[in-house]
Every structure is written in C-alpha cells, then in structure tokens.
Length: 312
Image (spheres, rainbow, N blue to C red):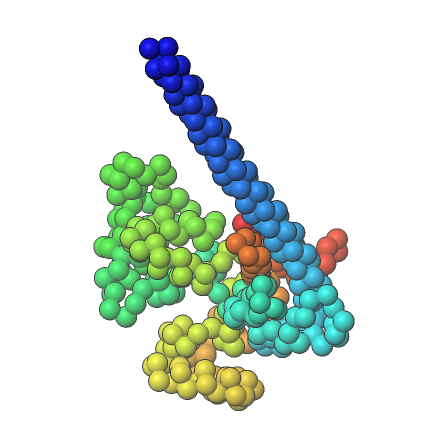
C-alpha cells in the first residue's frame, strides 16, 4: 500500500512539473512572439521615418533644381547639376508624368497651367472634365448645381440644387456656399452631382484640378480630350495635334494659332511657374508620399511661395 501511495504522489508531482514547464514554454513562446512583433514594428517605424526624411530631402533638392532651371513652353531644363546628390533628368516635362530617379524614388512635376483651376474655371469646363461622353444628364446636373452652389439666391436651376436639396440629406453637416469663390478641390466633391461620382473615379479625376492662381490654360500641357473641348474640334483633330506637339512643339503652336476657336484671353502656351510636385519614396515595406504646390514667381521677400504641403 505505501508503494502505491508513493507512486501516486510521484505521478502527481510529475504532472505538476510538466504543467509548470508547459506554462513556462508557452510564456517564453508568447514573449518571443511579442518581441518579434516589437522588433518588426520598430523596424517598420524606422523605415517610415527614413522615407519621410528622404522625401523632404528630395523636396528641397527639387526646389533648387526648379529655381536654377531654364524652362520652355512645357518643360524644365537643367543640365548644370551633373554632380548633384539626386540624378534628376536634364529635362522634366511638367505635365504630371512620373520620372524614376532610382528603383525607390519617383517624382512628378505639373505646371498648374495644365490643370483646371476650380476657382476661375467655368462650370461647363469642370463638368466636362468630370464626365464621360455618355453622361450628358450628369453633366447638366453638375453645371446647374455649381451655378446654384455659387449664386446667392435660392432659386433652383433646372438640373441644379439649392440649400433645401442638401438639407434633405440629413447625414450632411454642411450648407450650400452661396459665394462665387470655391475654396479648394475638395469643395467640389460636396456639390450635387459631383458627390455621386464613384470614389475610385473621383480619386483619378481630382488630380486634374487645383486651387491657386492663374486662369490661362496651357495648350502645350493638356490632354487630347480637353484640347478637343476647349478648341471645339473633334477627337481626331485633337489627337493629331497632340502627336504633332510631341514631334515639333513650334509647329503645334503655329497650327493652333491658325484655328478660329483659339482665344488668347483664355488659352496660351506658357507655364504659370506654379508647380504641383509629387514625390514617392519606398524602403522595403515603408512608403512616404509628399504633395505640394509651390509658386516660383519671386517676391521681394521670398524666392518662392509654398501654397500647399502634405506629407504621408
């Protein structure tokens, strides 16, 4: 009998020891997992900070590139920075195209004369850019809704919307502006008709707009769709002009000058010298974006003026 009691006690003690060992192993495994996650999180945070610092460094370098560059109708030209820290192209066409500086760095520069100014552009121009050919009713809705958004009366246009329309949508926490000055690209999104555009499409379309100075459209920068619209020509003629522009910019300018629809009060071939700059830097799993609009017209106090700046 004593033998069985001793064996029972030993078995019980062994099971306790095994449970303790199992608990310790579980604790060690959990701690190792947490430590691994912490290391990965710390590494990710460090990489994010590195990309942000590099984005800002590239931004400062790119500003110097622009300030020391020559420029023509659609490009920045700078061949004097051969030993520069970043190998920027000697020619940057300022229509928003991307340039790969290396496998981790991409930059884009857009002169705002190739974009649509939300403050100065007419409702028809804005509606045209935001809609497709088969969206005529939406185009009418946007045109009239922008008119109603800006005017001070409470008379609803045929396809538009006044304050009562926005008040019926209880989830909205804003009222109609009733002022002719639209203050940002994001404000467009609040307007009836524009608010119905799918989010993915809106993200692509809003890059064609900006808020700032300037009202003259640079025909050397805009795409064939808008070129056809603003010159009142068909798509075939517009595509032919864009092809000519790629081959010989001077011939393109001379050809457009001859068109009866060319209006030198609304359009031209010159840069505004106000640039929308985008920079993307990647480092393993971390990515940083910088977007800024800078006016490079010198003032008495500053060589340039930063209009907007966003770092993500």
